[in-house]
Image (cartoon, rainbow, N blue to C red; front, top):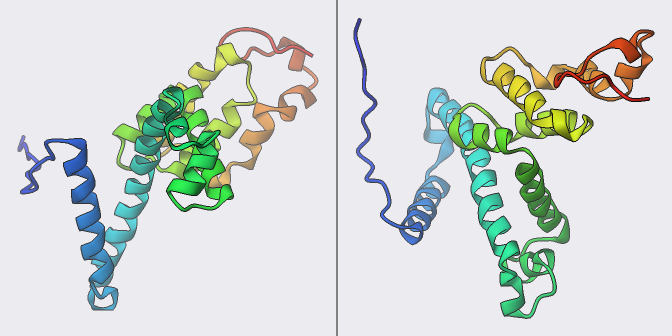
Length: 194
């Protein structure tokens, strides 16, 4: 059996500030590069990497924004909420600020999904949003177990989330439409309530 070790010439950052500088530098390079001069293979690699980085960015932003909100860092700048602070200090629209706050709350309520987004290069924000939407409809004591099952299925490639509208039904009203809904067991072992 041959073992291959992934090698990179990129030196890991020594601090958060250095990591942010590296991100800024990398994006500046990509934004000045002529994409029409890339091979289609390189274009595909870029697009796939951008999706993976989007998920990583969502997690990083959510963690920082969650800590910033808990510390009421927005008050230091005279803002009354993290949404207001985001609008005034990061120059985003209200819709974008609300989306960022939404991800912060969503991932705080779904630590299993957050961990998958942070750890798995192929676990996108799209998968995460769909899975969280499904499991949000479940009783709170079942949510982590359901997140584990669906996250594992998505990571294994067994859950094509964009083509599973029936899962949404199963996670909410579809469960109760079945004649035997009262006798069914939820993923955490309890019967659904009427």
